[in-house]
Image (tube, rainbow, N blue to C red; front, side, top):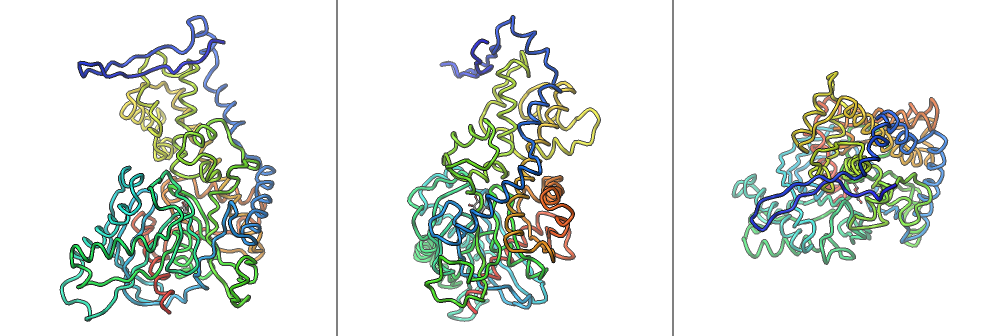
Length: 505
Ligand code: BGC
């Protein structure tokens, strides 16, 4: 076998012209061998790599359960099982006006939520796309940006004199990264996830960093003298979703986020959290736990079925070894897994012979949204897939190739959903929720926008638990609301506000 070489490339000539080249990755005589394999043959190989049997899933669930218990027993574990200092469930009758800033994996959002009681609320919001520079630059600059966006939001949503003199608007900060907490208004960043790498932030109290940015902004702009804010709570998106889902459905026991990252939270009896026993809290009371399960099997890699594509993603990430579970599941990585398989087939001389493949060879060029588009292409000719490949990658495809891509997308998406089911099953089984059934609040772009993802998670739960798996129900949006993104965002803000309020009770 000749050594495989990357098939295409583009160079900028001194004249400024771009020269694109394509080199066959196999010697001529190898071509017939490579093309003899049909796409169906190739697919079989990937099927066996990406398929998770129910038996394997149950093994993962057992290992997961043990990991969750260890995280509750001792500090500093790989899956940190973070006590959040959010105590108990909301009543659904909470009222008031709250500001929220939500720093997620892709966007920054600022909003004003009015809780009206009876599970009703109103939201006004602004959304800002984060740049790569902001994600990788200095941490304090990132919080300065948050403060600037908050200032702009306040300026455009509050009229002069609309608040009482000395009135402080409580501000909730949804910070969707692992933070250890000693109080609800403090959080020390353990590590960045989801490709973030802002310097001078890990190991520091991010609530205090944000307060510092607010103070600076107030001094510079004199704005917060008129509309004062007080950062009263810092919470993870999963914890927030847990509380928000319970606000509309009291059967909620667990919350999951499947978006750029993935994670879960649930409510634990304080007596079952040995590592905080020294605090002398009431054993019978309950506290939300932010599992940070994306870290499951990190570094050791002994439980999860990692393929060589997963290993490549991990090793070329800014955090090798970390977030092992998340890297197999979340929206940040699924497109990249598919892209790596395609690149392998380009290298092997199977796909796109004679075409310039440089566009698809750019890391992360294939967004996870494409997987869901490929899967939902309703046309016989798979016209949507033709569009994706010609428009974004300047590549022509045959029908057989398109069918192959679609099937591959299904394999990658299905594996992600079934692994997600393993995590949910571990919590449900550990907490004994199966007999009576429970509701799981779910949010995140993957869950909301990848059409078959929720059904596959549900199917996975039935593969693990048999028919009883049907007793785990998912709540995507609020009762009476349409299933769309806006509602998902509305829910996001509601959760922050409920927690902000909780901290003040
Ligand atoms: C973070 C979690 C977060 C999840 C979903 C993960 O990368 O570590 O804190 O809940 O993404 O946003």
